[in-house]
Image 1 (cartoon, rainbow, N blue to C red):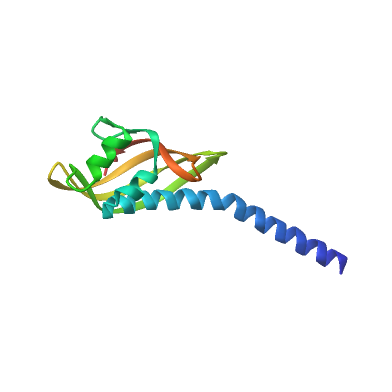
Image 2: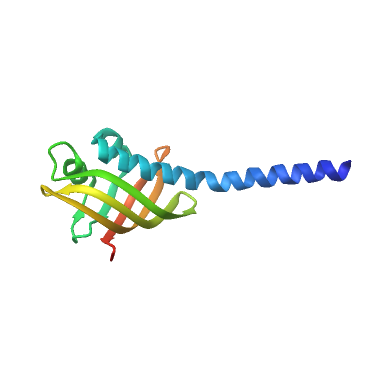
Length: 145
């Protein structure tokens, strides 16, 4: 009976540890989806909350953008609009209050007035600050199809 109880507690502790390790990855994935959904719906207050104040974004066309530039660019009347997206096998690693996420994303968008459909390869750096995960840096490039 003692062996059964000890086995039960070991299994329970192991399950809690697995969930504790998975939770931050789930939180990053949720933050990624929140960011994309805010761009799709053009909810700039939510979008802004997913970006660190000192974010640096390197686009597939070689430009860099600050937080304020991104909000104007992606907001109503901006030059770009995400219509839909699909994340493909994101890989997330947690390093304390910092995380990386990389993978592929299929994007349907309007850029500079032209409708585009593309697949991008990205590397994101996220930081946990102000009680939430925020995108600190992003580099994306068009993936070969």
